[in-house]
Structure formats: structure tokens, C-alpha cells
Length: 99
Image 1: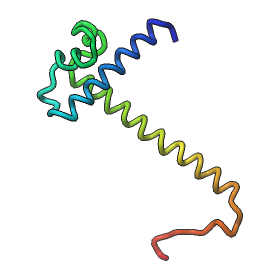
Image 2 (image 1 turned 180 degrees about the horizontal axis):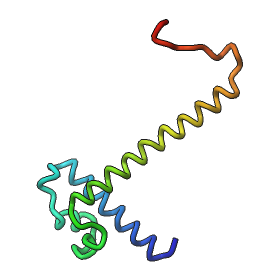
Image 3 (image 1 turned 90 degrees about the vertical axis):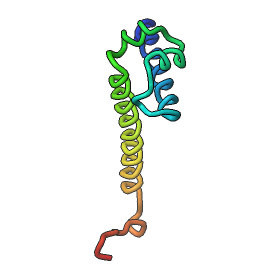
Image 4 (image 1 turned 180 degrees about the vertical axis):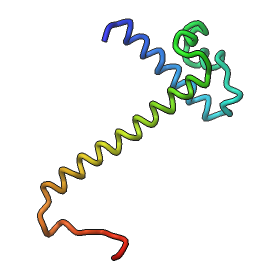
């Protein structure tokens, strides 16, 4: 990743965080580009280099949250598979709705 790419993603992260902090305090409909930029420490023109609307920023935040959430399950699933592979027969049992 180049220095410019790193700066681009760092700026996007700042705006994501600023937006999420604002969402904790007020409804989406009332959050303005000016508020996001002020909280993130960026210019309005920078916001518009990244997004067309606040709704685009919301979509990106939701996508990032979903990715993070999914990664938790992927890690747990791989750990679970590993624990099954190394478990003794006595440690394994079936849980079903019929029990």
C-alpha cells in the first residue's frame, strides 16, 4: 500500500468513526456533512472525494461492521473445527432438539 492509499483509508476511517459517534447522539436524518467533517478533522471537499452522500457513508459503515462481525464467526468456526479434530471420543457428544 502506498503512502497516498494509506492516507486515503486513514481519512475514511476517521470519517467512519466520526459518523458512528454522531449516530450515538442523534438520528441519521439529522447528521450533516459539516458535523462529520468537523468531528473527523477533514474538509468538506475531502468528504466528497470519498462519498457522494451521508447515506453512502452509512452504507460503508454498515459494510465494515458486517465484515467485522462475520470475522468473529470465521475465527470461532476455525477454532471449533480444530478443537473437534483434536478432541477425544469421550469429549464428543451430540446435541439435538430431540434430546
